[in-house]
Amino acid sequence: MLVINVVRNLNGIRKEEGVVTFPEVLDLSSWLACDSPEHHAPGGVVYDCVSMVGHAGSVQGGHYIAHCRDGLGEGEPP
Image: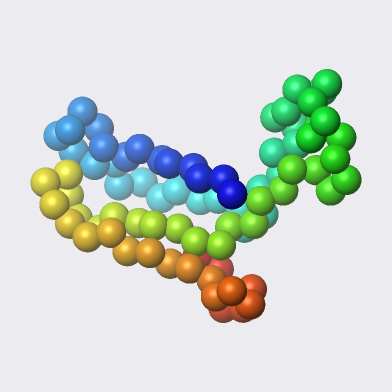
């Protein structure tokens, strides 16, 4: 499992509103040291995006909304 946190709170005063895009499949093999065993693993070090959490609102308040794929790998991507 890999968790990536994108901090969008600027100085506690305002929230960055720009769109963040990311691939559905993320291969991190090129970011590993060449001498690490994972660097040469068959298929690389690949993560599938199965969920994401977004925040609707301002720095002062709002709601977190989760988007998840079902356990069968079906459904719309997050």
